[in-house]
Length: 128
Image 1 (spheres, one colour):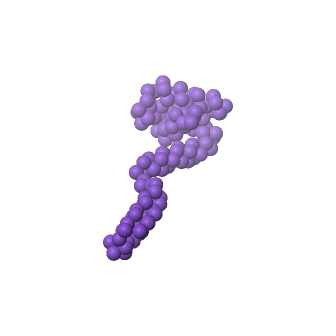
Image 2 (cartoon, one colour):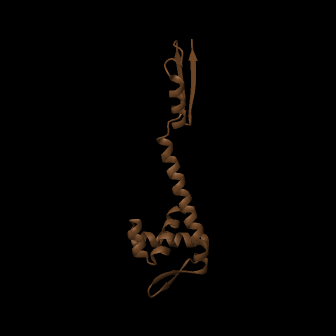
Image 3 (tube, helix red, strand yellow):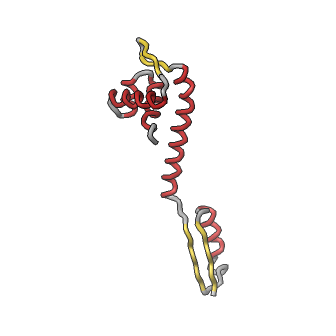
């Protein structure tokens, strides 16, 4: 997670070709984006961009690392989405006890639909 902001800055600058446009996209200041890039490059010991009159362009090392960085950020986004989904997932154990025949009150059909919609829910039915 140490390089997360640096990776985001790297990918944004690579896509935008400019620190100022990347800063706008990331809702950061230009100095903050430049600092994150510098820290990332220093930590990696690589130069990722070259300055040109039109803006920044990727070096060969930068071009090589860009797809890996994009994949890492996509993986992190998928992880965060999965974590958020866990908050809305019905899971746990449901114990139902009845003295009436479960088929008479159509409990079997209900439980079947419930388990189909909430596969992480354990059900336990007791009659007696």
